[in-house]
Image 1 (cartoon, rainbow, N blue to C red):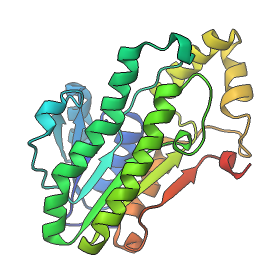
Image 2 (image 1 turned 90 degrees about the vertical axis):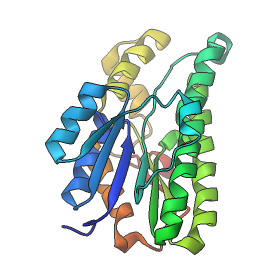
Image 3 (image 1 turned 90 degrees about the horizontal axis):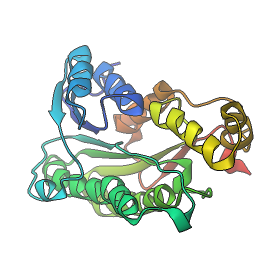
Image 4 (image 1 turned 180 degrees about the horizontal axis):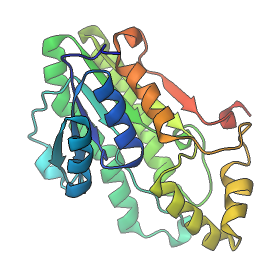
Amino acid sequence: MNDLDGRSALITGGAGGIGAACARELAQRGAKVTVADIDEAGAQSVADEIGGSAWTLDLLDVGALEDLDLHTDILVNNAGVQTVSEIAAFPPDRFRLMMTLMVEAPFLLIRAALPHMYRNEFGRVINISSIHGLRASPFKAAYVTAKHALEGLSKVTALEGGPHGVTSNCVNPGYVRTPLVTKQIADQARTHNIGEDEVVTEILLKESAVKRLVEPEEVGSLVGWLASPNAGMVTGASYTMDGGWSAR
């Protein structure tokens, strides 16, 4: 499938996990992909694999993002981190860092990309949200707050971008088989004082009808479709991929 021939794409957090899967999917569809990540070696490795380019980018340096002029047709805001802690013990500086990385940085990148998209009357903004953009869980105050904010940003982008041929959507996976989730399993085990296997069955997948983790390639496939011409009328939406969790 080459429905993205001639298109350019930028993916943040592209050195691994969901970001790398998205990079591979968009490249397979013909897009010229820029893999952006603070992990220089990881970004370069993925870029070399798919014939794209790497961009070493620190999204916490928001001052450097304010003057960007991005010439990209497809923007995938994927970079994120997790912290598991009760609110009373949540470090304020960590909360601010997560808001910067997962709300302010996507805003600045969207802001930098829209002029090019508007000029070409084509654009795809795809925000990797989470089921936690639609639901809440205890001990994840910053992550849930950030993802809810990203949902709002995505919808406003959809409303403003629609007349210019720009769509904006969120992808809302449940727990994906990534290093971020692997670390979270260990964090949850410590927080709840239970074993890691019990975390998977009794916490992560408790509400899911399909009892397995989401694979990164499944998320990448949905991102590829949202970037394609076939999704031109899909905007302002949030696509759950959570094994039925949110059906309850």
